[in-house]
Length: 254
Image 1 (tube, rainbow, N blue to C red):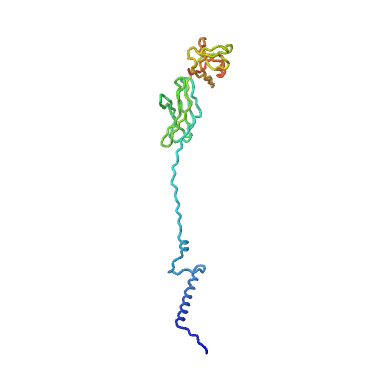
Image 2: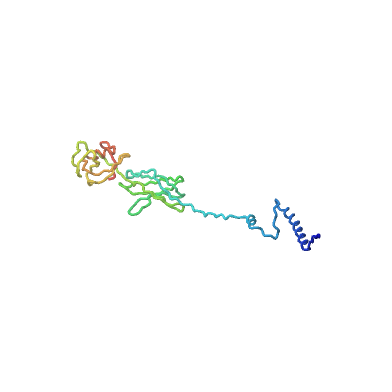
């Protein structure tokens, strides 16, 4: 016996619905770029797509402005004439590194327990300066150079050679023929004895003698000279170090 295929109304309805759904999906797939299906308007975009489409703005930290550090200036005295006859002028010159506009270099003298300003000079654009002072007395005067600080720059201090005053004195020398003889201040004279003879300065008194660009530190070791017009007698060693002749003027600080 032959059976006929029976299609129920329910199955027919299902087949028709599937066909309609397939027909609606094909145009939507074709309209997407590259043939890639796009989700329907009611569907929520995936997490990956949302992350790709959302622009990311990186937060860049702006560094805080660092204030420029003020450098301490440095004084360099390149030329000095700190010694000479009383009444002459001592001169100090040099250059200041890292100076600021409007700064001054001041020459100060130590008097008592304080430093007191003598004179000053404005620092030039190239950092150069020049100050001077009168040599007013024999011996040493302690002086220093100082750059004065202002609102634009710090200050600096540099010690320099003291101002040293001399006077002229007429001298002669002694030595040959007297080596081995006793000295009035003790000991015996030898070719290597560095010293001077003077009529009244205490034995052992230290003094500085200068002739030209040569300078010698010596002590009073004997009495003399006993020739009119001569104030000092130099030993042979002192004479040689100064480049002194037989008689003449020398500069002394006593």
